[in-house]
Length: 106
Length: 154
Image 1: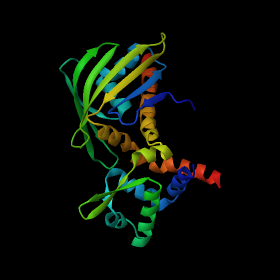
Image 2: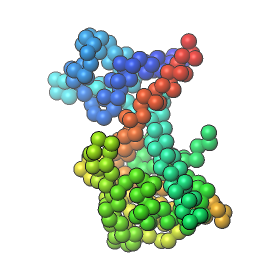
Image 3: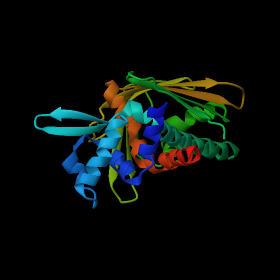
Image 4: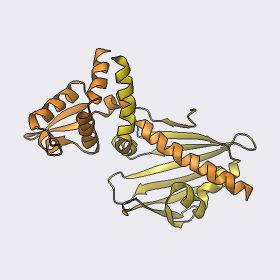
C-alpha cells in the first residue's frame, strides 16, 4: 500500500509527468531525457531515480547505455492508460449516434 | 456519468473488445459503417475509397489541425448486412502493424442496438502501443485527476 501511494506522489510532480510522457513513446537514455529539460541534469537524474524506484520506469542495459522505458503495467495501476482510449471511442460513438438520429428523421 | 463504451483489454493478450449500446435501430447503426458520407461525418475523416463487400478495400485520410495527413486502410473480408463486418485496419506508414477487426451488430429492441468490436493485433506489444496512443495525448487530463486524489490524501 505504501508503494502505491509513492507512485501517486511520484506522478504528482509536473517534471516527472513530462518525463513519463516523453518515455511513453520510446525508451530513452538519461542524457536524451535531460536534453529535453532546462533543469540541471542531476535534478533530472533524481526524478528518474524516483520514477524507477516506484516502478513507473524500468531500466534496461543496452551495451554501455541504460535506457529508461515506461512500465505500462504499473502506469495502468496508477493512471489507467486505457481510459483515454476508451474516451476516444466514446466520443466517436456519441457522434455516430447523434448523426444517425438526425439521419433517421430525414 | 454512465459509461456507454466498455473496453476489455486483458493483460498479456494481443486482442481487445470494445462494446457499445446505441439508441439507434440496428439498420441505422450498420448504415453508419458502410456508407462513405456517413463515415466521413462521425469519424472526422475523408473517405478516399470504400467497397463494402467481400474482397473490397477501403482508404481513409485524416488531416490534423497542423495540416499533416494520415492514411488508414484495410481489406474487407466479409460484410453481412445488419450483422457482421470483418476487415483489416492499418495506419499507413506507422510501425503499429495490421489489426484484424470483427464487428458484430446486434438488435436489442426496435430502437436500440449493440456493437461488439473484437480487435486482434500482431502482438501483445503492438496492442499495448496502440492503447497508449491517446494516452500520450490525454496524459495531462488523466494526471490532473490523479493529482486531485493525491491532494485528498494529504
